[in-house]
Length: 229
Image (cartoon, rainbow, N blue to C red; front, side, top):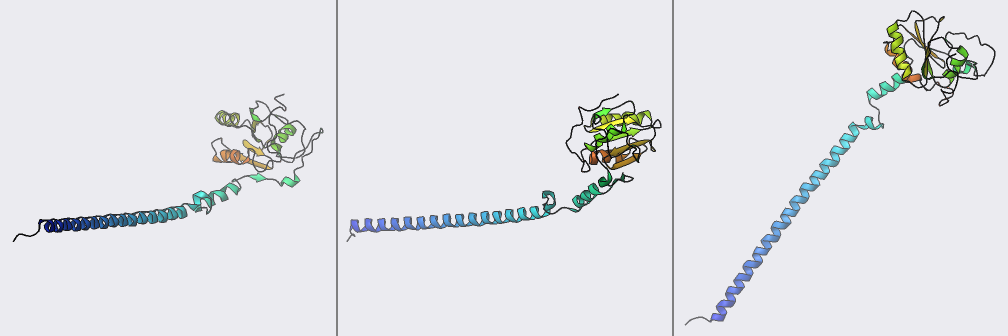
């Protein structure tokens, strides 16, 4: 006796539903496993990135200024250290009165003291003749560097120094007959003697003292004063 066809169909349909349900369960398991694995990988990458960022920040803290490196500390100390051979005068003893009577300065060229009320133009001016001390001292008060030289200076050195001055605002240059050194650089309360324009201290002096911390009147004019007489 043959079985009921309807019963056979129901059994077949039940088998198909069970197979489909099993397939869907396997699919969910695969998806969940993939998402979990991806989450683990991403978390690991984020953690590694945070670690590397923190390590690089710590190793580069000197560059950010929070913890100076040894080189930066040394450079800062060098910037504050006196330039080799430099002479300096107590700024408190360098008076700054405007006077009309001639001042007898204790050093040549002078580096400060009472002076004429009109400054020597110092916007990178190269003077072919000696300029009045009292006007040049006023320029130093405004933050200028004054380069002076005697007839012993070579033509090549004079040319190099003139090129330096002519491209440097707040500087001036002139011959100076009675000074002790062949080439001298003066700022307010500071002075340096060198034998050559190639001496690296020339650049150091300019860098430090053109409108440097020694300037009594930073930002004051260096033009509109006395020009060559």
